[in-house]
Length: 135
Length: 387
Ligand SMILES: [Zn+2]
Image 1 (cartoon, rainbow over the protein chains, first blue to last red):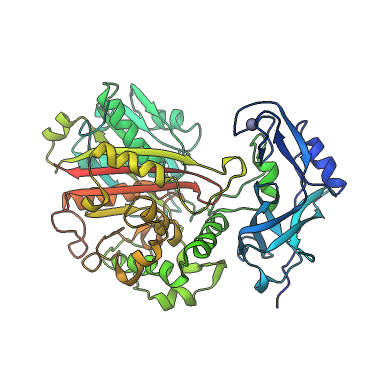
Image 2: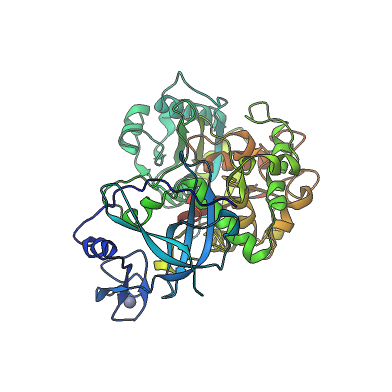
């Protein structure tokens, strides 16, 4: 079994809109965006709802749990291999991410994963996912 | 209004170089333009419409029109990655049909091999809305396509062996193309034995990195009839952009599921009528998904459709990319759209290599996927006919 290698993550890009997202990440919380007009969550976060175009949207905490929609072991994209994945959060949105802390050979679509955070360059927390230890 | 038979592709030319350390990108654009105009029997002074995309250097359109010495009354720099040039043909036909130009020139060129660059990383450019939420995870081109391949295998039971057949077919065609970068015939076993680069894709599931380029000349039908070339008409076109749909990601289909039906409807034909198809083969999975989405087989059947040499001219039921495609021939500027159109024109003219020429080829389809299949991409479909 091969543990997923880890690579250094870059510093996040923070602006006025995304500042609360990165602040929550530093406290171990993954925020998503939900629309008060149509009730739908969306990803990646925007100041308006891509489903109904309303700007009545807000940050809400995600459970941090989800399932692997797809993944790939990126073996040649950098000095260290990494696992790029789409994870469908229990809230229904699917986000691009990296998987960490698992065994490469055991990764599979449909696998339950949970959010964890890694320090990017400069120390800011970046959400990644790891196989669930509880169902 | 329809573009059906409102424009013809009178000139098509592919740069023979696969590595161009001694030429600038702009110079390659010029050489491609010159080649396509000569192929049509036209001259730079005849051009009154010009089309280029993100590979054009400098201020793109403005730099190139000035550099080439063109005097144009219609321009278009639609940028959808490698599918841009299919859109350009469609847009040129619209412009011709509405009287905005008579002779449209489309060029592509680039030298990623000489410059030792490949793929499009989601670089940390400012002001790109998805970048803060994606760039940390490094979704570079190859890996984003691999995500689609992995999901396709999961949903439909597609196998690595089936994907490999797309490369095998390309290699059978490329052996007849003296300009192709990879001319050796490969087997399914060869593809599977090549290193995994981004699971489930192997090294040989990926297109080549090459310099070079190509150009097309799209003209009013009356002008085409005055030239000494076979008549290749634009019969139908469709375009689509597919992304992540606000988080409702579905990697099981490509934008070809939207662009294809529009093109077929406009042309008034169905997939059964198509004798030859140029399908942008950035990776083997790209071909499998487009064939399904265009209706050449049912969704999920693409792996079985491409197996057993079914894409090989003279062997299978749908010859695809008879020049060797991006997988074996070339992939100038990391963009495969224009070479797809060029090989379709060769087939319709009867000017493909005799060993891969489809006998009596009267109807061809071209499809392109530009951008990243797994994140956000453009799809463009063209249906071309020999008149
Ligand atoms: Zn909404």
